Length: 318
Ligand SMILES: Nc1nc2c(c(=O)[nH]1)N[C@H]1C(S)=C(S)[C@@H](COP(=O)(O)O)O[C@H]1N2
Ligand SMILES: [Mo]
Image (cartoon, rainbow, N blue to C red; front, side, top):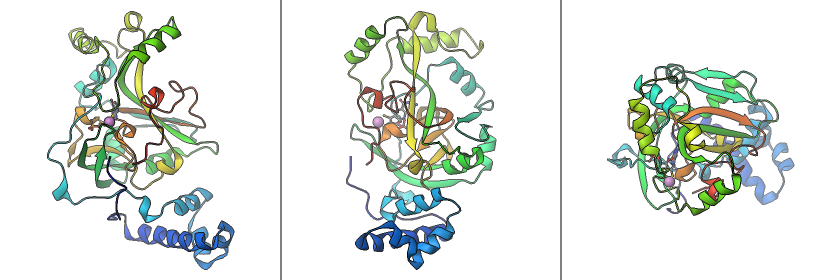
């Protein structure tokens, strides 16, 4: 992991940039005086308050100081090879069926605590406003790569769906099975996962999953059901979560392109999260569904992500 990113090169449209720099400057001045009420009463605060259509935006602007943007790099620094890591070819039948048709049938499901659940095809997502950012990815294992990501800001998608007032977290459900939980004996399943020494820098694949992949290919394109659950237990798929502050951060995008090309399967096709101030394992690949929720309880082991459930930090800031 590298040191905290230095002063970022902003590539946000100018009006936005000025907007939140003003608000940030206001906040900075205030912290010396102490108190948000003073901020609200100041001319800068008044402007920031009026500029915000709702309380959320006001909170966002308070939190978005320039230092909280991840550094963006010139194209000349793009890594020639963006090392794929973790799952690089999901073994799941449903995913293979989508990938065989080059994701033409893919629909991103957006649901949970939203006013208007969405099912968005890649064409729908590409028709929404896009953002391109060249950033450095830091895996907890100690390797980094710089890539240029293009995608739709998560805020655009969430605004279309409309958050309900009790929304707190965004959960990303991924296509890839990481392991199989024994359905009968929860104790046994725990023992098994305790034996594992995998970490978020490793390509973790349960024994037999590779065979599984070729089996399902040989079996042809049947109904896209889960891989053989009866034989192997319940699939435990990768998932991740972030809070609303990160969800509405301007650099938080659902990326469909890497370095100007459609995202390769190994890097998370057709859609992966980029949440640039966090470690590699937060960058969920193969995102199929986005669920808005009030609590992280009830997802996996309740830790907020596959690796978090195995002891890794939830926030994972760089
Ligand atoms: N669905 C899914 N997302 C994932 C992983 C994974 O195994 N499955 N691995 C994580 C880890 S540990 C890293 S470092 C990055 C790797 O992204 P890359 O393959 O594009 O390098 O994806 C993250 N997101
Ligand atoms: Mo990682």
